[in-house]
Amino acid sequence: IDKPFGWGFNRYEKAFEHYKSKFPPITDEIGQFNKQDGTNNFVKIFVEFGIFVLIFYFFIFLFLINKKISIDLKLFYLPFIFTQSIRGAGYFNGGFALIFFLMLFTYLNTYKKFR
Image (tube, rainbow, N blue to C red):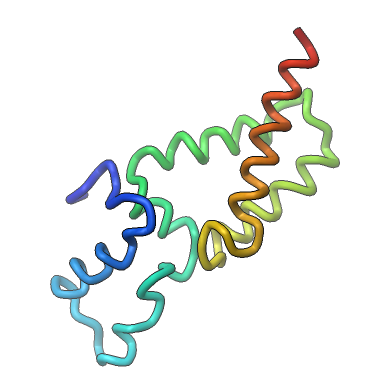
């Protein structure tokens, strides 16, 4: 709410430190967990990019409902995105960014073929 457009790329740790003072952890040891990655990509991407994340997940929704993209590709790409969103540790670990760009190029190529 403080920064609706996000804290900026790779600035999750700054947001963590900012809110840590407002919502202190039970112990100091707990306060150091997930300091850099937010324990999942959904939280991290929302903190860093704010409301622009809605565009990202709207694209994933469009990819999912697109009838021109084969079910094989959807079953290959989407589990990566969903599992990395739930429990991924960064954009470049586990193929999150790679799969997103492959999805984007597949989506664009689908419309290029049918023109």
